[in-house]
Image (cartoon, rainbow, N blue to C red):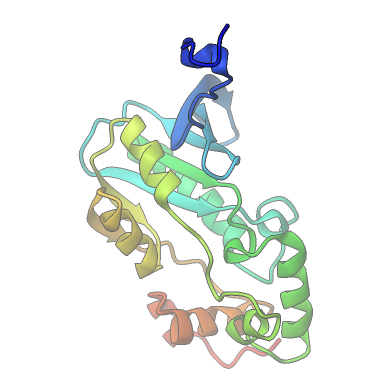
Length: 224
């Protein structure tokens, strides 16, 4: 081949563009203690995270009951009372079964509002010394909330969901879905009775992160 010869791009070593967005990889039956779900597995090509949506029943396209659940190992798996995450996940799964259809999108990479497991544990240690959840993140030089919901919107679009009834107390989740093109027809409260170990955390979420937690008004002066 001479210097001025031409050849197909593939022969010149050109590489295909990296894939972006979310890709459905597998769907599997998932029997649970709550009911018979379908686990739909996705790969987030932008972050490299593996994601899963638990789908119950025939969900349709409009006003689907949906929970976007941020991964929380300590709460979801270990039953931590520092937060209400495990109870919220259980309540959401029960709610979609009672509804007859719905989706729980379990968002990996959201541990500690997106700062990661070890950083979350460091923040929890600072909270044990008296800082609140916002102050602890900032003391570590970390964002208060680093979560992104673009992948959740992509999963919902792949499932054919155009509008949702969102089970959440967090207005930022609603705003994020709308920003990514998913209509939120209703925000459904997911209120878990507080306990002595998490009342300070929950009050901070209400006062500093704008979570809608009206049930805390009826709670007495619990202390940690």
